[in-house]
Amino acid sequence: QVQLVQSGTEVKKPGSSVKVSCKASGGTFSSYTVGWVRQAPGQGLEWMGRIIPILRIASYAQKFQGRVTITADKSTSTVYMELSSLRSEDTAVYYCARGFYESSGYYGYWGQGTLVTVSS
Amino acid sequence: DIQMTQSPSSLSASVGDRVTITCRASQGISNYLAWYQQKPGKVPRLLIYAASTLQSGIPSRFSGSGSGTDFTLTISSLQPEDVATYYCQEFNSAFGPGTKVDIK
Image (cartoon, rainbow over all chains, first blue to last red; front, side, top):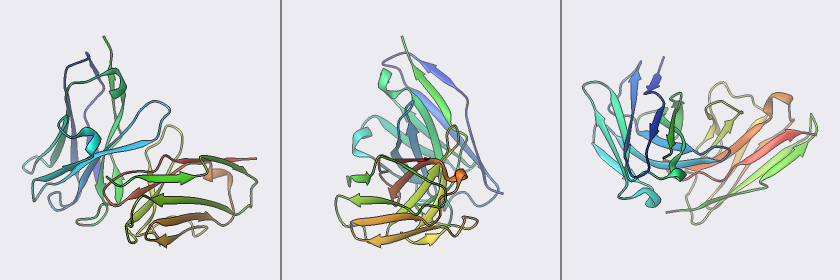
């Protein structure tokens, strides 16, 4: 059974950075795409970027280019998303999601979400 | 980046009604499209991938069609448990803004 377990709630100051982790269990890790999606309060889903761990190649939505970094640690089956220069508009629940078959960009498995609050 | 749009933004229908949601991509994406359902307070669930393939375990009243830039999600007979927001997504990329479905 595939499970994605994310790190806990974060409260950050404007201008700082946050790093959220997503640990996978139950199944091969490296050859599955892992994406990051966020959802601001009362808003829709927003795709931020993705990585294929075995290739260590990440791609990002244009909106977040230069501000987001997605990395993977194959030894611990963990993917990280770091967002810098935080502002209040970055307050959201951040989800990691995994493709449901190898190299798939269709997200069949989701983490539980991590609430990031940006406030002075 | 490709932009995804959806219509309507919300709808209200009766139990048993046929419901159709449309999704449009700003440029052609072949059939690289998924549909997700998100209920309040829950994580999204994959319903359909490759525009028309039903994910395992999803009721057959859900169906998808389309290719290129125009896609549809159809619920053939709306049930109370289908109250949710529905999102389209280009493969490994942008989501549409969502369509909120509730019961009249």
